[in-house]
Image (cartoon, rainbow, N blue to C red; front, side, top):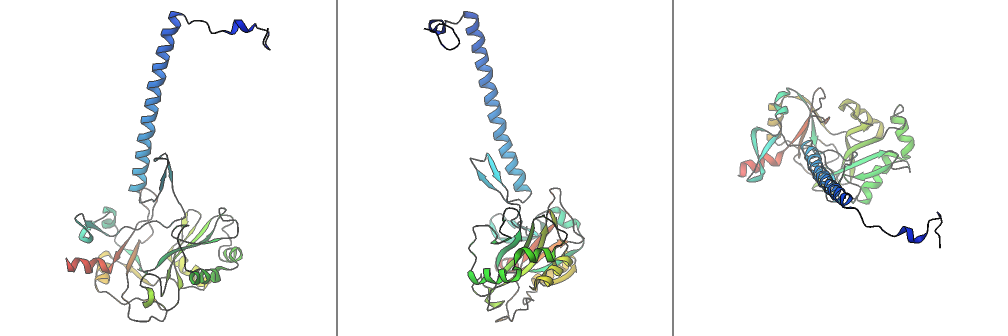
Length: 294
């Protein structure tokens, strides 16, 4: 009986390997095993190194498959460091004079805006959201109150047309408006407004962050407020401003004299670190309250 190739089936029986062949196969197997172990170790080191680089750069990521895949959300607003280091034994206490990043000590002037105590919001368009745009919190899973969502929708509807009007030269570049949802029912926002609202503080078009003057212009075109600006200041003056505990400058018929949460300082002119991130920091009033109570 023959197989399809014409060889008798009995000729296909496994023949005993020669002594020399056995030895060569054993060496090859050992080499393959060593190469596989080296490759696994290298991948593990790469995973650890990549995670450390992202952490050092202040970039948030999601680790999947035991670190084999690191997912970076480029639309999410980057976290902002506090100006000062924090006490290792008490993370609620800052250490004035000890910069959390030495680059802060080398920049003389900063553009300063009020930090709003609310819910981080994103309004934008990209090919990932073909329906015309999106309204999201800090993450896609964030639960946005219905009246806040409706308020944001009213600012940008119809979303596709509004973005074309405001950014006529952006073509297909992704656009993201970053702001804060604030007002009664969000954090302790009743002191800002009895209603939920959106206030703009940053805009990103493609890979570029707009200057704050341009962000203010976008807010005017949208018909929404821009975060209160304190102008250009030195670090020492900013620290005094926060220590003085001023009432919020958000003009939304405040229900009481709400003390501002703090400030956000962006380098002026706009500078970037070695990772391509903007040089900026924050400072909160409660940091100094905690320091005094220590």
